[in-house]
Image (cartoon, rainbow, N blue to C red; front, side, top):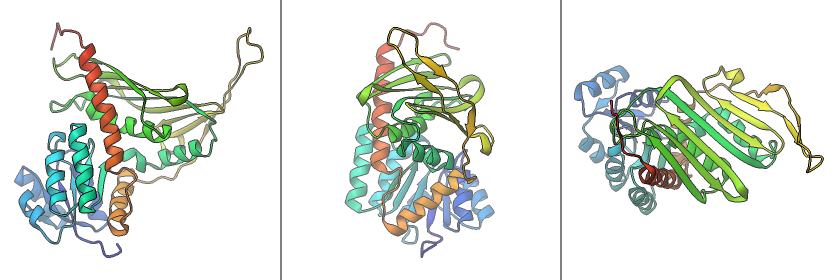
Amino acid sequence: MNGISKNIAVIGCGYWGKNLIRNFAEIGALTAVCDADEDQAQKFAAKHDVQALSLSDIMASQEINGVVIAAPAALHYDIAKQALENNKHVFVEKPLSLSVSDGKKLCELAKEKNKILMVGHLLHYHSAYQKLKSMVESSELGDLRYIYSNRLNLGKIRREEDILWSFAPHDISMILDLMGEEPSAVQATGSFHLSENIADITTTHLTFSGNRKAHIFVSWLHPFKEQKLVIVGSKAMIVFIDGEPWDRKLQLYKHNVEITDETAAPLVDKADVEYVEVEQTEPLKNECLHFIECITSGKQPRTNGDEGLRVLKVLESATNDIIKNKSPMTNAA
């Protein structure tokens, strides 16, 4: 591990934290775990033969030089700030924080301390997304025109954050990356069915230069799971469906639409789907290895603090628009 071994602490042993613990243990970088539930922390410490430490002990440790934060989103800012102040590299699960102003403070602190600040936008480390991105950058799809994403499921319903902040960061992150810029306009609507203050369904519309558009539909009140990203270019269209088997995750359509006469309907020539070969790897392991590599080399992560901040700006703008357009609730469950 290039001298980086047994020096990462994972804070949070819950739903997602357990996956991070497993991956850092498998790559030989885990030295400690921490959780508000001490019994939970002890269980994972025993399983992986590492220490169960308090948050204050992790911050004071000279051995631990990197922390991975998988705590509730409301705690991300405070824990990340403590870690940076104690000269730790930080990998924080999405979102970076719950406000743009706090996100900016973390980015500034990381630069001041010369420490890595990485945000857990997992799909950047998915081999299918990396292949898709390379196809966009090589102009295989032509000029980007439109992107849309669906991230739908029944649950996991939260009370500390709404569906926008829970599900949409991954899609916003990919869209900003593919478009290569921040949107010039953000519009959003939300539906509130289970709680007056927590949106269950949101639709977010983004406008970019060159009349390029994107929209993101997220819901945790959906009858089935769907994770789909569609990119429409001037030469071809591609679909990333994470729920499909590996040999069908990336689907390319070389449809052709030709305008021969402005007074006549465009001619549409539909092509059969082509399945793009992608390497079968575990995205989370790739992400964990990337964090270690960045600590070792000093290079900036693909999903660094600045990238996380750009996503926060969209989330905050969308939230403000949802609140502005919100109708009074009449039948909360």
